Image (cartoon, rainbow, N blue to C red; front, side, top):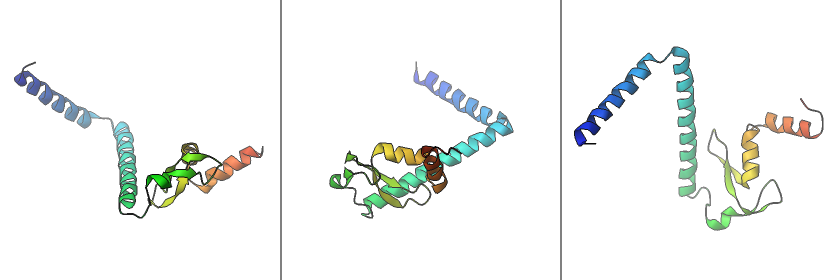
Length: 123
């Protein structure tokens, strides 16, 4: 493909993408914008966490990442658990515990529902 053909193709792709955005149905546009906002907020939270680690608020040395999980008896490599809204560090957890907290919604209601289920009470 020659440089001229490549440039012509890129111009067509840009125009096509712009046309699709203009013609997007309103309900699809709303879904797209919510998804984009959620993605941007996650990037901001991740950035806040990285800046706190860099500034020394969180000791992110290799020694701090190996140890005992704050929730279970696992000993080994740990990940930094943080509040997704504020970026505040909560502690060091193993990956399964950190994932479980996230899937339960990172809130007391999710944990309470999980405890009730575990005790056989369901919802």
